[in-house]
Image (cartoon, rainbow, N blue to C red):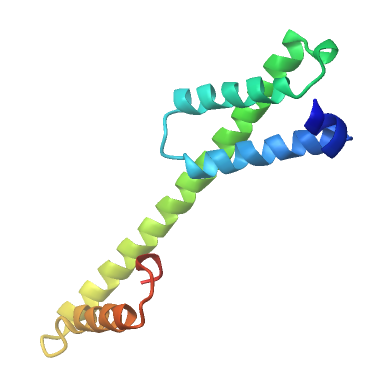
Length: 133
């Protein structure tokens, strides 16, 4: 009640905050099962209802919020899975193209692999993080 009454005078800001939390939850836990995502969203809504005055609680609003947050989480999780799939497909395409290029000529065979090794060595010397290599 304190957050809703003092910090979030308008209930819409509170709704936006929880929608953003559900979206970020979907992005972070896109690898989890839909049941896990549903249960966590149920906990989100229960926590959300702790900040609402008791007279505005109703089963219909509770169910609507659970479904809204769950759908938001599932959409963001699906988008994250799709983005990771695209990234993996791009890496596989690059590997296939470099392999085809290497096998085209025996003189330049393994050239792409050697260039990749040098690039990783240089990145390690520059103390770059593993994610940026």
